[in-house]
Length: 107
Image (cartoon, rainbow, N blue to C red; front, side, top):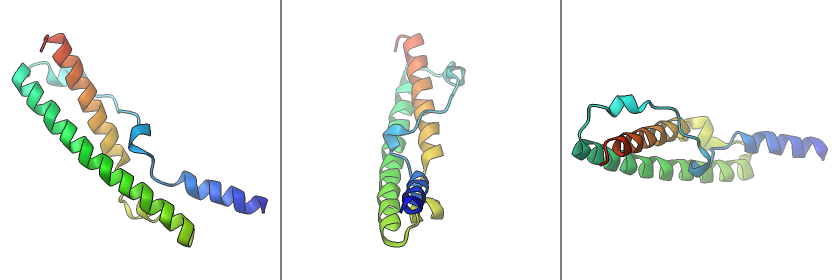
């Protein structure tokens, strides 16, 4: 029984993370220092849209992992590459860098 609980905990730990739990990767605001306010606003909208799409994909992967673990004991979505955690981290980092640049430029 104890071994089953440990095995279940290990398998569940391999499941895709919630998009909200993924920390942003660092992106330097210097990347956007030469951008104008309209360009920054346009890029912020593009990044926000891409983040929404990636977050939905991550949520779907998390659901698939949960079902996979319950049915066959394996996080199938994470194993097949459906989880997009690194992409979400990158997009969140870009979003923060854009916001910092917009603040510095008083956009």
